[in-house]
Image 1 (spheres, rainbow, N blue to C red):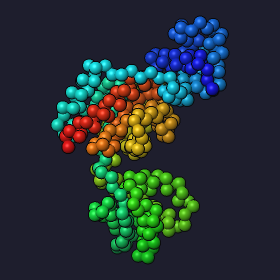
Image 2 (image 1 turned 135 degrees about the vertical axis):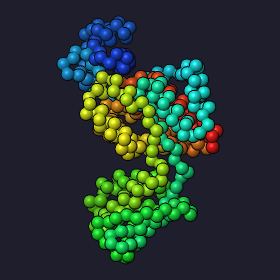
Image 3 (image 1 turned 45 degrees about the vertical axis):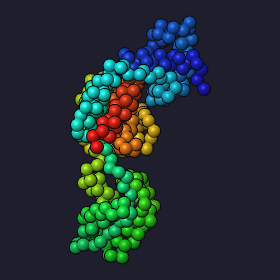
Image 4 (image 1 turned 90 degrees about the vertical axis):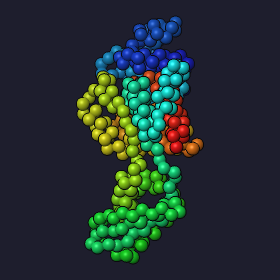
Length: 345
């Protein structure tokens, strides 16, 4: 449990650090909090907050900065979100709602997110209607080549040829296909792809050889399907804005982050996690699960087409972002983009 006094001081500390980017000392807290507390009392409260893992002291500084856990408590319990000004809302409606083509709406939304927040704006390209895996078949070709047949929904058929590490007999290929169909038939293709490319890798060691090879073949097939179907992509704007934040000025960290933007898979996986979520999602620092984003926060919101979630958009910036401003900008932009895409269908 954290006392009301400690919560109030934490709120002041986080807001001051977000504004100035400098460690906050007890004297500053005493002045900004408007609480009749002695510096000694404030230092004791800060020590308690530090023991709880909510703040820490960078290097030898006498001041304190919020930790990921401190930001999380602030965002979940202490944050006061400010509604957008009417003039800003009108500008957003005009710039997103008046474009005539869906791709222009996506590009406009990502640019607006970047311009309004001075961070990186990202908009996932809309997913197609839900596709379910009905059946998967492997047919032997010459050498180590295998024809993969994917039957989606009721009638869509996709074929691709993959190269395997060894030759498989027709009986082996049938057994592998039976295993994969038993595991995945009837499931949404995005869920299948995500499990095959990610989670199943962790359990391959416990499978027998043929089943492990089946997963490897499915990984190859679904990787190519993702690259060839025009989905699994996003529009990004303003990534160079991140270079202006002192806490992100480490060139090696920036290089890794820009590599992640170019490779896209990690960012897309994070956005995918928000597809099934309701409303705003906030990943702070290490909560994203990707070390390259340890110094970043990602604020996302899903947008809808025909009352179905079609994609996700958001802002990527330093953990020291003005959440009270960013959250309503992301929320409203998602609603306006969905409305624009519905209008342009």
